[in-house]
Image (tube, helix red, strand yellow):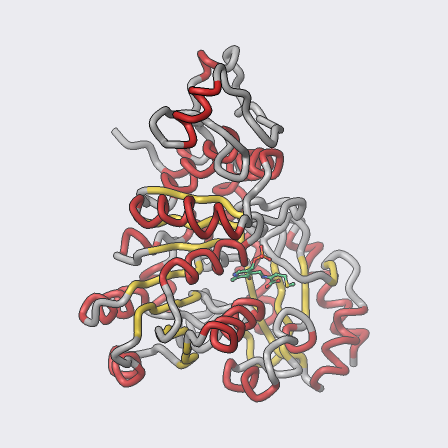
Length: 392
Ligand SMILES: CSC/C=C(/NCc1c(COP(=O)(O)O)cnc(C)c1O)C(=O)O
């Protein structure tokens, strides 16, 4: 009987009898693999014999991670990448060719926006960012050359949600592939493939790692596609993950469920406190019953996550003054770490997005994004409250 994700996060796939009974996955920190004979090398390169040839084309520690990621996302096959952008770019380069069109949720991570711009400028892959709240809104944007629907949910950094079931039904009707960036939830809170999405991508740098010490990416999808990606985009573009980083992610994944539960508990507490503060406007948190996406969050997420975006009364100057007064919460981009992190999207993660585009995404100069960490929640709140007090 299939074990719950909380158990599968911890247990391994590799055959311990072939690794001295090692409990933890061994690290194959090697760039290449020695052949018994020239003929064996030939057979392996020809794909006629199972076995490793070179770590850009596959590595046992990375493969252990990839198997686990596919299992956790309930997909057929996973590939690990050197960064989240490595995963995002590999999937989109696999699915799109010059002249195609991709429909994109109204907000995405800044560098994802940058990649879409690059694909449009250099390779004539057109894209439209728009509010995907209804099937009608999507169908209005579909063109004959549309191939892919790309969504983040919750969206970075506005925390808006996209209805995956509706998006996937609409995509199926129009023979479009659905790619979901599941970074903000991790497979513990949301599993888009089980709803019918075709691919999931992650910045594994975030919750999957959970310790702020790895840059990594992941993608999970159908084996046929993933094997093509291995032997084309990944092999020839080369955004591969190293074995030690893969090992750090395997280690981080073991505590993903307990970490996410704590992130969610702490975020709920901080939200309730922020809601009562007179100088905090426009809080966006999926667990807010007054949030437009609350019902959708309840439907498609196991819990409401560890991220809260909110506006500081007085705009950018006050937002920066507030951030500068924090001591427990760290001023840093990224998210999903043990440490609580805060950043100013307009001047940091989404600075690459032109002001008019940021406005459309709902990113104002007053907005800050808080990744609630694993610290004592009272300590986190005391830090935020003191910083708010010193801001006004
Ligand atoms: C310089 S800003 C720091 C990074 C942030 N985000 C990254 C990110 C990526 C890309 O993932 P990497 O390549 O692993 O950073 C992909 N998809 C999503 C939803 C992401 O949030 C950030 O702080 O919002």
